[in-house]
Length: 348
Image 1 (cartoon, rainbow, N blue to C red):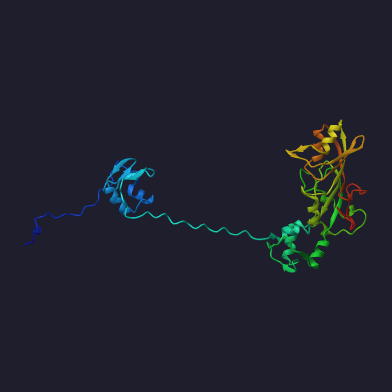
Image 2 (image 1 turned 90 degrees about the vertical axis):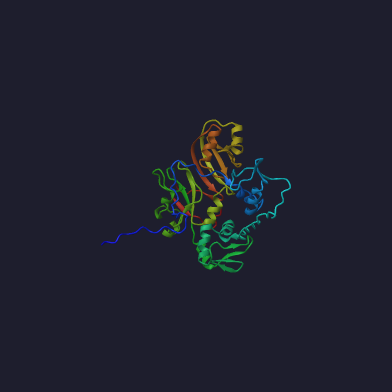
């Protein structure tokens, strides 16, 4: 006979057996989580007391939020609500202020001035040339050789070059060119050639020996408009470039300017001093009549198309413009489109 299964005997305990039940799943549409921040947490963050003491004060009804007494633990409030305690409430702990964070000491600024900058300011060379000389170890500061780029020195330190550095500087050439109309001073633009393309052996005037190395790093020291002719300096020497270029240059540039129109005495006075370009007053100039239709301009600055724009301001039109002198270097009898080397006895 097949045995039958008996149901388990009832427990001797009269209490019904409890079964483990899973927590009910979240019901869609249920009430959102409570808003605000726990009152006790806000009290702690404001340094009023610790969390345990806050709960004790709330339970005793000794805490007021926005004037309303709170006695229910877990109450949430707005983070910026006003919290006060009942009169006579004594705190067990004294709130401690947050420890002050020690300020991070600022990194001291490096002392001295970059060697390359000092060399450029003293007219020894350009900053780029200075870096090249320093990198090769050809520069001495107060008798000590310096070969690390970025080295800083005292502004009044003594700087010298060794024989190789001095020889390298002496090899740099400066060229005097009579630029024709239609050539640009710098990089080629709008189909026009750069003036440096005229520096060829067949255009050399007055003797000297041309070398291809003389074209390396050759750059104009200043500019001359495409519609202007005359003296243009091209150089490999950063010292000369610095001397001739920039608002602080004290080297005179003289121009002969053929004009059309009528110029009054007041207009001539304004050309000498009193005009502004682009909202900035021009430095004093020397302007005088050279002949019936030609003015002589002597300037110490070189704004873009400056002379043409100055003439327009006083009712004149420039018909022709030629630069004839830079410092003590004269254009002289140098034919248009030809060039020569700066002579050893010439200075700007």
